[in-house]
Image 1 (cartoon, rainbow, N blue to C red):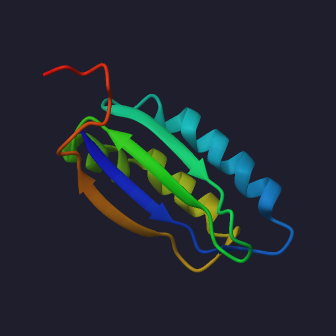
Image 2: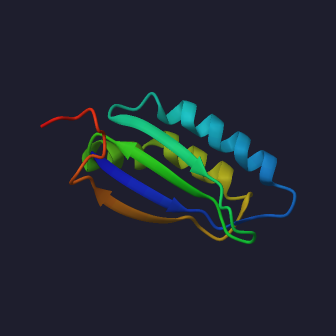
Length: 104
């Protein structure tokens, strides 16, 4: 499994509800891409911190196919009016799965 953790920049004043709608809409759009597993928005507990997204894909290859798609380009353009800056991604490969039902 491949994980992308996205640190979103500060959301522009008054745009939080629109950002959350965009995130929900973009999840629906990304769900149709092969290899997509899930995408979760995390809200910080600490005041003044930024949202983070956890994206799970079957592989780096399926993630990159989605990430370089027309869908991604359209959604990125739509989101630019919501942020002060650009999202910062970090990429990870799962080496140990924490699922307790996975008895290998």
